[in-house]
Image (cartoon, rainbow, N blue to C red; front, side, top):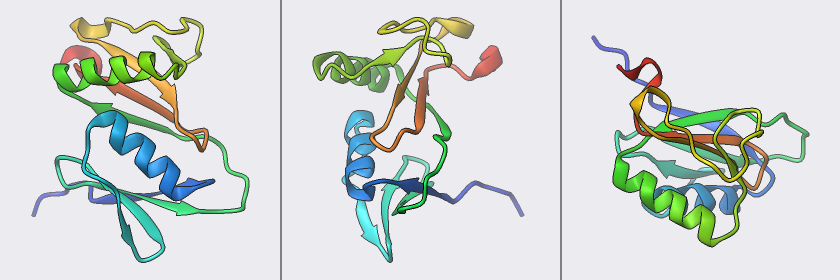
Length: 126
């Protein structure tokens, strides 16, 4: 038997807004309601299940390995919409991208305060 990642629950201030934000920026299918979740399905079938909560929560980090064309579209959307983004996880290289490991990468926050990252080459260049 193999082990594959299937889903995770992501706390949100507004599950519909956060799910739509991510799906639209990454060019993914429209999020779908599932039980008390708003589910974003990635190309490999992994589900990000957003749930509304009134509880304070720290922003979590979610990294996505994307193709060059998805990255190009993402950067265009971030810039056209004036969404702040960074080349580094500490947010010191504002509105830039990085070229780590021979690829490209960018960090941005979703409406619930989670830290999203898109990279075109995995860390280490593998």
